[in-house]
Length: 491
Image 1 (cartoon, rainbow, N blue to C red):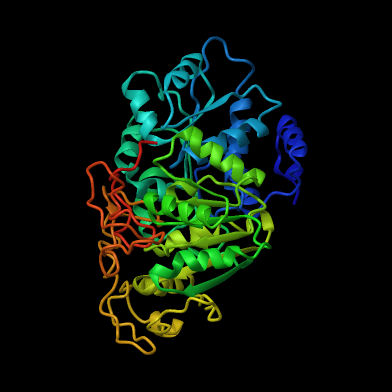
Image 2 (image 1 turned 30 degrees about the vertical axis):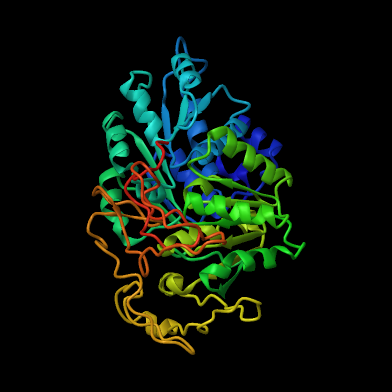
């Protein structure tokens, strides 16, 4: 199939040709026709499959078909809500590219920057508004944003948006939008709990599911290294001595942990920058620009900040900390292997993260190959993981049972059970719930005092009010799951 087969108007086809788009991805081929007909769409596809074009192209065409140049101020006719600043900016760039030969105007508003320029743009008017929920609520309350003319609503990366604690803001925004509208709902993960929210938002939707629910991208080469927490920085440096790894995205669980990894790598002579919520928008964009240009070899990011990072040539992702919510693993490894290319995803697994690895393998129904030949094996020996057939037996236990170790004692109940599964909570990396708070999963083994002299080191920190809400600030600590806003920046 070609884009010319999708009944697109000539200005869009001209723009797609200029951008070297020839064949739609599977989600584009299925979602675009339904969206052009005005149907609600429920799309589930892994990151990197082309979801942005799947909803942007129909919006541009439908709005363009309503007539010529508007008289007076443009009204916001389409609203696109996204969880992060980076993703909002990326969507704006894509829509500008797809609509360059039309009269459609779009703009993004995000937190972390002065809102004055955003106020000016809203006063001038636009057809499509891309926004993060926190900043949009601020501008609505200040009477700068008027949503009463919205005809098409998009919730992009909805699972992560609601997981980040934006549920109440999203509900407030929904109350400002006309009840009669088209809704396009896209997300990378789609567990069963999404059904209640979908029922409340979508009317007779066309469901587009390109890959199995929460499946991992087959073309990505995955591996895991069992390593003690204190040795993670040394193992990372060891792997980066391989010059064939030209650029790599490293995930940490906390903002402070990301900064610590950057300091360790810089001291070792490896160029690295961090991108997370504590950085200003200009600093984040500068770090991302340096990474894309090759000036910085390693970009260290938290999960939230990494949303919207779209780099087709990114070949390597390293998880310095395994995520304590298995769906987040799918999001992370999806940063590589984009646009049909292959990729490599490497994970470090310390003792306390073994239950997380169990849950990842249970969710993906795949064993992650273990790399045993490396200079920093676990002092207590490699843990013994159950086979997939054993782990499929019951409900998710989150590592509550003992995990026998080679050469060591069984580990006591790490991780705990998943709380409130299906009970109306928003689950990190999963799909949103119509309830209120983000579901939290207990940390494996609890937060421990840090060892000095490593990227996960430093003194045990007291949680400060307004902080990250993620436990001690450490690259190597396994805190409780991200969830209710805590200290997440607004938009």
